[in-house]
Image (cartoon, rainbow, N blue to C red; front, side, top):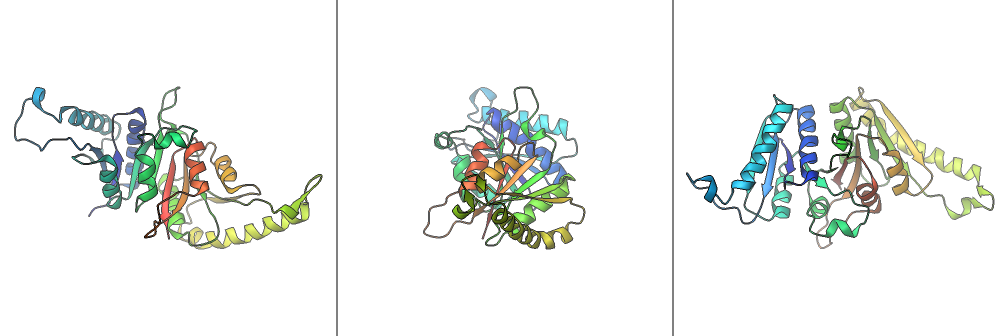
Length: 289
């Protein structure tokens, strides 16, 4: 199957912003864009039926309107409309398994609980087999939040495999012609705390160790993508806080998620949760081993 970028459409401002972001990304990656609208009550497609009795009229209109806008903005982009008579979460998970990436609208709310009130994006992010990007609605000033110029930021844990994460981050930065910032946050141990602040020697020792490990993790990818300007950032604080702060003004934040293991409920780690709920730029969640 030909690689494709899929975006979920439901008519909300968030999904429209996601569609615009996905069109930009598909064009940069030279891939077709699929507009997916899923609803269990979609009727089987009849041969000929007047609009006033067509049960799928509004679904077709949504996809047709967005496709027309995106083709105007991207004349050379292949845009495919897809109506699926299925639960949105199931349809998106199936689409994600077939796509280079899946792009969804994000409510952009601060409260963790708010993401689980009728929102399909979080379950899809937690279960998808391929990268999922969450995009917030357009800013009040106009223009999508994803249009903020800047670098690609990737959050690295430095323990366990991270090849899938780095492959996505470097490939994305190369396609955009953007610089890449690799960020690692590490909380200082208790013995590094002193009454007047932080023990400088201990902090510097930890920083040097992280720097060595970061350089080692990035070495092969710097060689594979010599055109990408790479920098690293080390935050001696909680990983979640370091990543969210580093992503201010970024074009995209890339975080990892452990692949779902049989018998265990899918979940997101604290860094991915913080990135999704508190980051202001689009966030790509990449499953890895």
